[in-house]
Image (cartoon, rainbow, N blue to C red; front, side):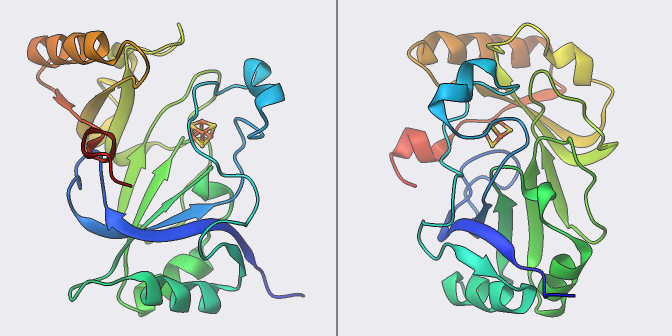
Length: 213
Ligand code: SF4
């Protein structure tokens, strides 16, 4: 059987901008591809997820390519610049289309803290340290628990509302203002919702506030 290769759009070292780990240094590893949108603008209006602002198509970004688990972990450790436990955030696209036990184990045996940002439509392999579930419209969530649940608010789509996720098995619940031309209004609505429902915490996209990647 040929050795499995993971399709990676890009990798970069930065500060996590959102949610529980906001402000923490991490290598972001963006998998290519998503199951809720092809990434083509011509297909956006008919996709399940329609407000995506991420380029996850192909393998042509910084350190993009097709890696074996061993090659990928070696590259992740080269991109990491910290002097402490390396943290990798697997994102996408949808990382759980590709992330598997073999890659998680390869990370763990190299001392990497493994975090994932997922739409929740695929099961997670064992051993992931931190799962951030970000529900999307017109999709079925199969994950039954998460470390944090992060929901964009107000939802641009009618079928998702924070009330639906108040009982989800998570440690933390975050509401993140929808970033569009109404961002100030969206922030005000998000703050008001968090004030009324303290289960939910405000998550700001620090990378957009600060203008960094
Ligand atoms: S699920 Fe995530 S990566 Fe996929 S289209 Fe939606 S926002 Fe983009």
